[in-house]
Amino acid sequence: MPVRHRPAMHSGREPMDTASSVMAAAKMGKILAQSMVLRRPMASKRVPVRILPRPSQTDSTPTRETANASGAFTERAKSLAKLMTELLPVLDNFQLALKSPAESQEAQNVVKGVEMIYRQMLQTLEQAGMAKIEAVGQPFNPNLHEAIMQVEDDTVPEDTVVEELRAGYMLKERVIRPSMVKVSK
Image (cartoon, rainbow, N blue to C red; front, side, top):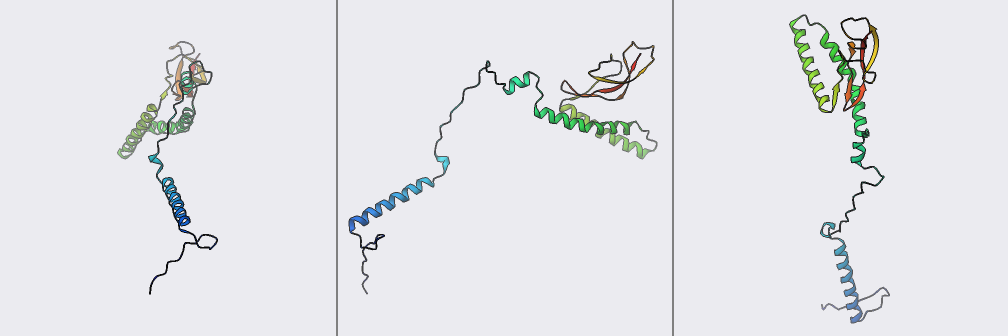
């Protein structure tokens, strides 16, 4: 049975002439070509990069470098100081544990383990910028020391720290906890 060719139809359901069907096919080809261009990955297109000029030094807007140079305490430093402040009671408890006498061999082994952990924690905190405030034998400084008691001591000059009751710490030039001390009269 021979196949009969049906004329092309458009939306009006009327037969299309040959020129119209060629035009419709060309239009469809163009639409397909455009859709293929749109489907290409974006990596193949080059996007021009615009480099913005650096703000001048006379600009009043503070930059990160000027803020840090002026001694501003950054958000990172604040969060680090908060963390270290929360860890200070743990350090105090380690110091108390190390002061307790170990009578048996087992207890001495436990104390050695605690001492190793304490040293490792101190080393980690020091690498982050924390330093212990040296107090004993130093002149009393209200910015670094918190005087709890005054004691009579003729062997040292007046207003000298005689004993440290609780260690104080600094985080890069900033006191995060002052030393609790006894001062000579």
